[in-house]
Amino acid sequence: MDPSRQVAETRLVEDVVVAPIPISNPTVGTGLAVVVMPFYYLGEESPLSNTAVAAGYTSSGSWALGAAQTTRLRGDDLRVDGMLAFIDLRYRFFGKGSNAGTAGNSVPIEQKATAFVPELLFELRKHLFLGVRYRGIKVETSLDTRDVPPALAPILDLTGTIASSGVGPVAVLDTRDNDMNPASGWLAEFRSNFAEHSVGSDSTYRSFTFGANHYRRLGPGVLAVRGYACGASVGTPLFDLCLYGSGNDLRGYEVGRYRDRSMIAAQAEYRFPLGGRFGGVAFAGTGKIAPSFGEMGNEPKLPSVGVGLRWLASAKARVNLSFDIARGRDDTSAYVYVKEAF
Image (cartoon, rainbow, N blue to C red; front, side, top):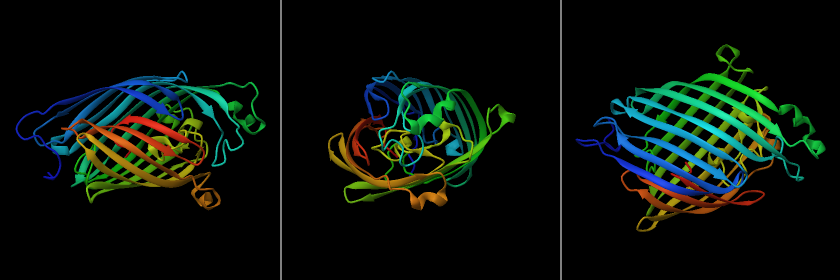
């Protein structure tokens, strides 16, 4: 067991974050969410586990209800994670590629989704985990087809209900000193999805994501850097393409305004104390999206820069409430959320 990781000494330690959170997001507008997040130890030598239950509604008419579980067992030899969510998402669809929406072409789209994604990881050696993930998603897509711009006419056949069901291997390298707000270490994660008819999927396709984060103390604060890549095969459904701006890769973009089968992104963030429970961040990054990795060189860069404010909601778990202002290629956006961007 790595002594630098946060552990319980002789008894169960508990903490609970309960927060009404204003939502500000360029994709779904403004609104309110309520998050309940208890933290607990499942064994004296295991890192913190937590359960998050959240519900929210926004000005676009979007709503979501979900639960996520992070479980650390046997001194972190076993990880059982997952999420269950019900979502009604209403936003603007701009098409595919890095030039989507540049001429103002978009249509209202609604996607009702149910997602169930459990994951099981075993520690193969110190800090290295291997396992498997199941990913079941059912999405009903509808479009406002009135006055569709000619450039978006091909999307009219994307309406209807699609079920995607797949499994794939997962590999994680995790040397962070804390899961919620690390100050040192690495987190590298590879996840893949093989959607097959044999496991209940309506279509067959492949996808993967790879992200690598590094954290180190620098002066009074922490420097965090991240690289990310996403790839998807031909025939991947609209909702499973690489979505620029999702998972905060990168902030300052409507999620899905730029989507395609390949994506890369890199960013750096400096996190520093301001006094008391408050802290600040400054971040910048860039990335690209394209039909394939071989075509990345022909696509324009999609940069991001911004600043943010942090408020320590749980000192025991080191969980922050976060507020960011980010400028992308097209717009300036505000974000409010729990934890760090990465």
